[in-house]
Image 1 (tube, one colour):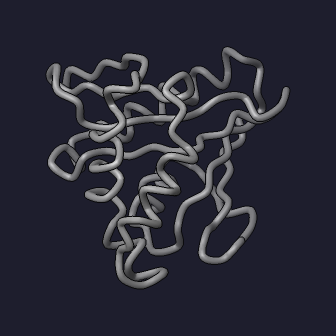
Image 2 (cartoon, rainbow, N blue to C red):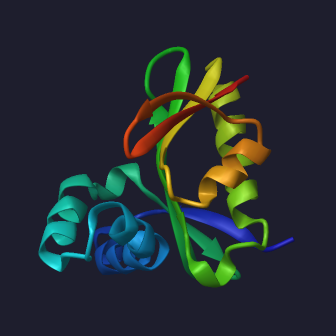
Amino acid sequence: MEDIRLRPATPADNEFLYDLHHRTLGDVIEATWGPWDDDVQRMFHQAWFKPETVEIVLVGGQRAGMIQAAPADAATYYVSRIEIAPEVQGRGVGTALLRLLVDRARSAGASAVELHVLELNRARELYERLGFVVVGQESPKLRMRLGL
């Protein structure tokens, strides 16, 4: 099992997170909407990146991903983002993080965990393997839910 730790994001993580997003989802974004537009993607990145809402995933002490998740309401814990660097994908990191988020949701008293995934994102397979089911389609995204 990998040595996986989390730490709060800081403004210094901004460029790492932008690069991570490009490396993890660039191909899916291009397949969904067309060529990567750096200006547009940086605008979206600046709009969502709030360090106080993001945790950096460390694998072996090195930055290797991020999560952004919190209670959406009393019953639902919402995973806004989870991105794992390609070089550590397939090593159980995503599974471990999702299990951690499910534990957090239970501790918060939630009865479900929800997330959205782009239809072409192969992370959908991981979510389904862990018990998430598609409960809605907001093309090009799917809304997935795991009952607790």
